[in-house]
Image (cartoon, rainbow, N blue to C red; front, side, top):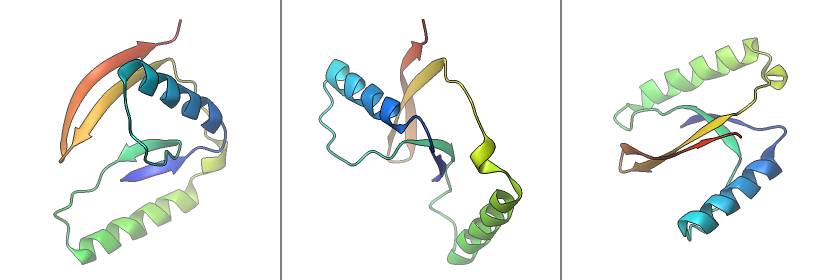
Length: 95
């Protein structure tokens, strides 16, 4: 998975996760790291392909000013990922 860790807003995301778990009855006890998923990498890549992807990501991230990216979230789509398959579960919109 390719993702950005959040510099700010992590506590709000943890609170949102707790609310979702309470509402949906989730019992997931895994540690949650607030992040923004950019993409996923196929499990079918060779070691060399993984290394090349890692080099590309490193090269691009050095050129970006990642600490200056700001955004506002007004809609959240809850997607379930299981065994490489994805399914839409819920949509949440800001009031």
